[in-house]
Image (cartoon, rainbow, N blue to C red; front, side):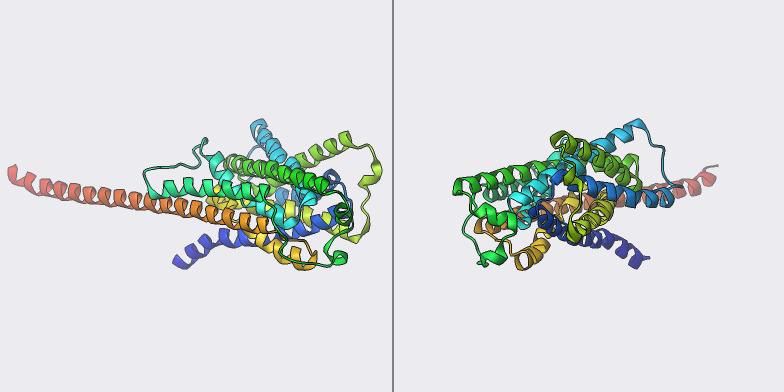
Length: 371
């Protein structure tokens, strides 16, 4: 029994590591097709449509006996979840990836746990006790993470690797190099702002998902519905911004593979896994694994796509990760203190029950003598 319990405790950790690896591959593929000129919103629409088609049958058959009634309130939650977790979030992240790099975009994802923690405070999903070391660590970690994010945004720094131009840059980025330095700085700024907005939306998704998981605890069905709403939202947004139907045509194997993989894996199984982890361990735990995406993306991004890694990105990422794990240390400390408090209270209750039993037995023995 103890081994089974230990195995169950490790499942969320293993799941999140696998999810982050799959997300890193998704980011690299997305960067590749975006550099080749694929439209952001078209990519999102295809991706979410594939996710819906892939997950809907699984959710229908797998969860048909345990699925609760789908109320208007739950549909409203799922619609909002699609906005902040699927359509708009992916749009801003893809825009940020195109204007910066996959590794740099993943660095912004490191802010997600802190923003999730801050957003969870008003909803009392998370609490802070400033009198305890854990509470102070959570505040300190949050401040350090914000400082790291500012460093990421405001300081680019010198490049740390030198790649030949022919290998280092995809076609669209090669053209971007020819632009004036002011134009390149403008693109970088737009990319940073897009990533900030995307990060805030992504953090909001974890909060919404914690509410969805309580009211509709069917990960496959809820993700399929969310993807369906997200696909409609993205399609409408795409059609409202561009009436050119040629952008909807997939060109080449890379685009087809990217759409299928990012749909079935990125927006499908990964979202299901994260929803399950949010249900099991909460939004902050799930978001805390975000830094792994950056590390794994860099393993592909730099040697394969020959993306550049700048000093500012490296320093900012290190600061963010330090702040993140100070925050997590504080959270873990508070959990330990709470567990100790509960154990102490349980011990006191048992002692009181034992004393009551002794008193009861004494009364039972003395009562016949009194008679």
